[in-house]
Image 1 (cartoon, helix red, strand yellow):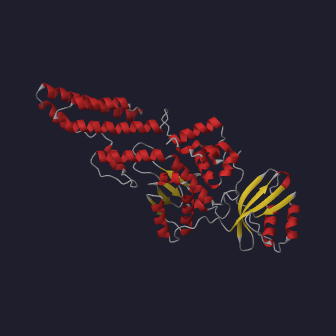
Image 2 (cartoon, one colour):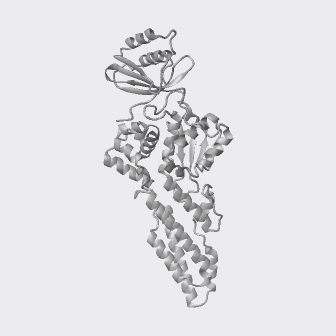
Image 3 (spheres, one colour):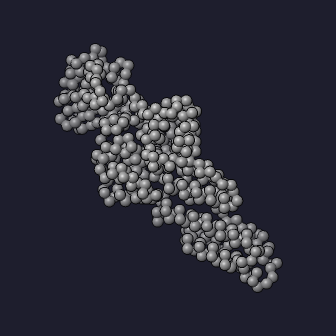
Length: 439
């Protein structure tokens, strides 16, 4: 079954004045509720709060008798609000549970100074940076979201940039946040988590958790959804970034720190075959001796083979196999022994080493059909299919296996019992950290 609660933007009713036990009871009777129970598990309710919750529970009761649970921010008095779970069960029995006063606060951040908090988050999670225009309140919510990420998953955040933007252009319904990275074997960036104004829009309307886990703001859960994508793609991104750094260094470029972005232009140039064919053609007629000419012809054959592979990759998407690349390395090493060919020999070997890195990356992060997939997601899909886990955890989870993973990850952190109610083995999959074993 789908996660069995939500929150909605309720019509503003405003608490009536006066509001007492008789007014609240009249609302319960008018809405046809069989019972209206009010609870505050962690403390006492004032009479004013009890009457308000009873009246709100009745006033927002759905017209039909289908079970429904909403996690809402609701008024308790004329000047205060609380985190309230409105639960409507079978037979028109209803319960309002106050799980906290005020808005979900989370843990106190290390500082409420904007620059200090930005620096603290960047350092603590080894981020590439936190960019864009932030308010202290919004940065505090980012702090809360990252604080909830399991310790073993925090390495996935290394080198990620978190960017605050106003909105996405042409994003359709996906307008709150998104994690973007280049899906390829030579990406010099570890990705960017973009957060928009819209992600904070519902924080005064509802909350997640509260019943069996600490309540959190919707923006916190939505950030954790994107962190799910960060975690799922960690091995893929790290391998790409490592390849990019190696490529630049392989042609004499500088080394890059683990959090630095490797310039794309430098990577693109580094993965090319760097042979001066014009100079080679001029050299040919000047050679004397059978051995020199034989090695020259062997070099031309090797370059021709490489060029054929490059053409096939560009035009048909057909890439050389690792064993073929290893054989070419062996051939040029054993056949091109004269010092004349050292520069060309070393370059062909370097190019083959680069291609072997790409072949291995593709074997791990591409399906046989050429589609992108990570080992983490591949194993998750196998698990979901084998255990017949419904993809309808949430409406958004239905859009793809990747979104099912990210939605599960976020809910597993903020309300693991809700994941268990959907499918107990799905919760166990995350409780046991099985999602990390494939990487």
